[in-house]
Length: 583
Image (cartoon, rainbow, N blue to C red; front, side, top):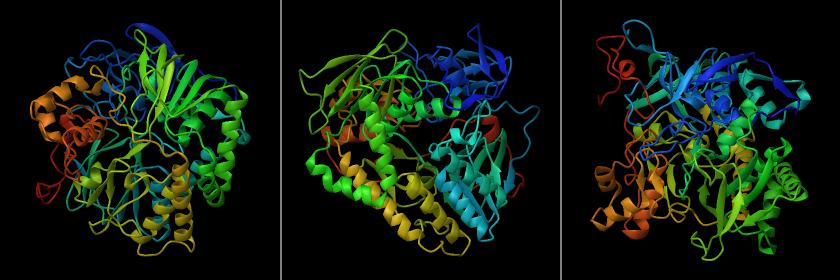
């Protein structure tokens, strides 16, 4: 379903495409995923066990939206722009592979040597942290290159409209659009070299980054490196969570904010945290029926007042915005289910309804509390996990935080890690929100150019962090990982491994993630364990015990993103060049 009004209208010409032989109309430049969801075709990849999967993460991480495209091969629909005459088809897991990089066409002719670049500063990631870092480094006189996997800068928070749509006037833009555009404009004004469609597939000590940029292999060896890789949403498995129409709140926001496409006509939003409230309010404002907001945290009471006052003191505008969104839902009669979670999604070929249940203090469903909710789309937001693969490949020291359930990189006050000259900022370092990410990026960027951040930057960062700490006291809930899954629930979406199979393997003597991987292939699919590993680690801790540290998770190995073998096998620019000293 396409969204209309709100001061935004199509700018691109409508073009004819086809999906599995069916003619469809799309807007040139929008993502293929958006075009297919708008056309009511949510089922994309054909899974091993039968049935289809659809758009899930919406940011190129999960691989659930793989399709076969004439002239390209296999591509992620969420990362592939529509062109006139495009012909696509669902791709099965056992089809002959023909992978392509982020939807880029295969290079013609014989592969040439990989290019090599040596900027003063390389920034990876074009969200608020990366944009701020690039601006600060360039302001300090450094030669800066910024690379971004998507077709446009802005990241998940500051995502801009795709070229397929335009604002009718500036008044139609909200703060997120405007702030993102201002950062993007300043990056251009500062002379930062920007490379979009850049898939980083490996990082090699001491500081070499291997990427495919618009189909061209490049090795970048910066003097200083800033990782602003952001985060992706945590997967919490439950029965039916792989049905088309079940997606993350981030994916739903991308569909709405970038492409003006609704995830469904009647949408259920579930998870934990303020992003879900924002998405529900945005759906409502766009004219979409919101079936309910399912929140894992308890209803705020008098005990939450100190946290609410602290959050209000540090960011009154954000708190006022949240209150307005909450009031809009209440005024529209949208029910909010506190201390609840989705335990099942149902439908043939796509979501048609969901089952929700009250959860106890450990995150387990309470018997006798289940109720059905009719919905044709489900948006899930259970928090985020840092995208730390590059930092781990380059040897940055990490520590496991059991309260948050993820690895946190060790760094100093400027964001520099245990690897000299390598900085990690924003949500890729540990989750602190967009404002803190922007502040961290500015501080680290100034440090890479040998300077210091503008006065008050550290004070602002402390304020943003205090706001986030207070906010998450309001939204405190059990850390949900495996508690909602039954025996038939898929824990590893890529390889089709169920909770029952994992438990049987544990009963046979497997005691760690490596043992599960060797016996079941968990973590060996396209997402490289990004969704199943945190679930399995928590399950292992609950059923086997033992200590979790930075070496308990799957080791990140190249390639960390899908690439064509012909690209990564190309010879280096010089016969005396190696990618890294350990190669």
